Image (cartoon, rainbow, N blue to C red; front, top):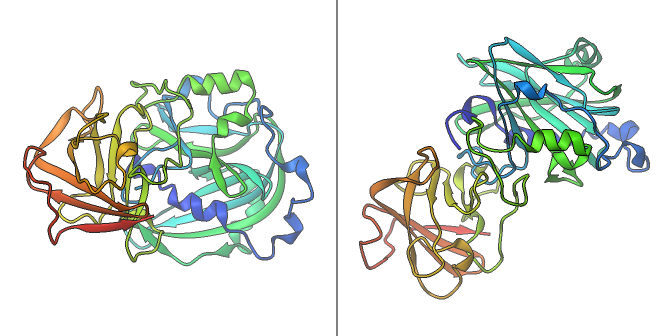
Length: 371
């Protein structure tokens, strides 16, 4: 989904935060201390009061170009008249890392926010885009005077500079560990879990009562469309080998940032719909999420999982988000054609005509993507 996400959520920052560790972190290396690892069903506290939660967006959200690929964490959305909401510890946790991100330094949108990771280096729960830390956590980081800082990088039209600090702090169930400030009536944050470097459903680590309360909120950011399909928490890795479905990287470019790439995947609210998530590399087509209803046969709007190395070219109409459900606002005189050249190479081109415009021929505007 685009629009509301762009102000608050840049989950690529969390990728850097969650995967990189200080070289001097040996004192907090918990590989031999599984007591700090996440335990399924152990957490008992929902981080916000459920009455304040408008929606919990499932895994797999798309917000290109920064999030061209399905996002590996969830998003809390809390539309509120309050100036801020407290963020509560989910249980008896060990906080192992706290990060601070500086956005767009020296510009009118210059600001900071925080990340908090709880668990061990092997498995942890995390919150991102925390507006402020609790006084105890602020005191512990000591203005990040001894933090490790990463080089500034850019994605989605913004710049980011991140510092993080290894700590070893305990927090009790329900203890306030941070604040989510309301901006234009919205308070929110990233919410995820990582197991051995891979994102997973954070709700699995809450008890049945807390999990049910949050699962009832899963859906579109405004709470008006729910996810009901399994897996209820959404999907991250949707690649199907030998088909067009999944994440594709523009040939010759690095995998990060995601801005230059493309994803042919399922919608994270209603996976019966499929989408083309476009970064900035497809000639003539603005970065956005484009929807269609997949077809089980033929060469128009074919299910991505059915597009194989069969020498055929397939055409897709492009629908923009238009509630009550995305995909029912088709862009006129526009289509995209794709061809799976081999299991690791995909040709894609935007055309200035719809799928009635045949034959489906590539021109010099073709862009090649690889797996």
